Image (tube, rainbow, N blue to C red; front, side, top):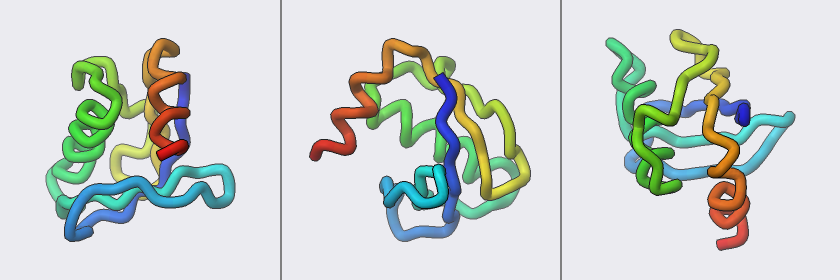
Length: 85
């Protein structure tokens, strides 16, 4: 399962935002240097979804704010639950 994301690095804490223009906005509490924001993004989704970090793959956007994550299809229900809170 692929999720399109717009990352906003340098936030005070990592958090989900709204969906805009087909992308989920995610604030990340890490600087966009040396892959720190990408690692924090994977860690954030790992904790939020209760998945091992190895199952959260950065498919595209390694050096961009526009990214695509690949998640296992088994995470679909967990993702839907995040938005019902």
